Length: 244
Image (cartoon, rainbow, N blue to C red; front, side):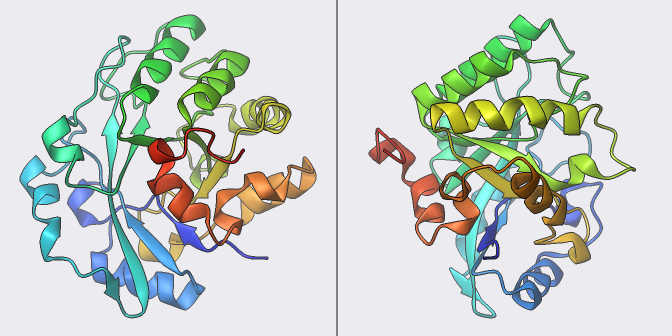
């Protein structure tokens, strides 16, 4: 069993990534992915593109080099109230939105405040995924996070780049060891992602797969392994019980 898609990838447009869209698509094809998500950083991230960049995604074909192209964005949560730098007008043009906490865009609060910020972002209808909820720089109440994801039918991300020795995130392995058993207990799905910032990392999810196996996490809750997993993410508001 191998991952069928990768929805968290970045191109040179993000300002701190190093490959073009075409290079990423070619890498996805070489990995055997069925679908690739475009999720460059939203405008609040230093160096990120203007919203016009995402608004012109209409020129991109649905399939390129045999890979399904899914149009998304990584939104920045910009306040502890859950505000984000993506509005309804832009989100309505996209297939999905990842919402994430990033140090350049919002200061960390307490675990209660950070969790509440993510929960508020989840209540926005177009947020489909919470990006890398594994960083001790943003402490979280993991049971409250998982319960909120269950309530709002949002997938939580298992981010491969968080486990890299060069990652700026802190405590990822310990944090996912708390989060995944709660996801299993409450039936909350996860989505594995590369968070690639260069073409050769597109589709790279080996550490995610190792963790899933080590923790004996239910394969049916890993959306990348499911033939219907991508459609479940994209249509989750029309599927009130998500996987149930």
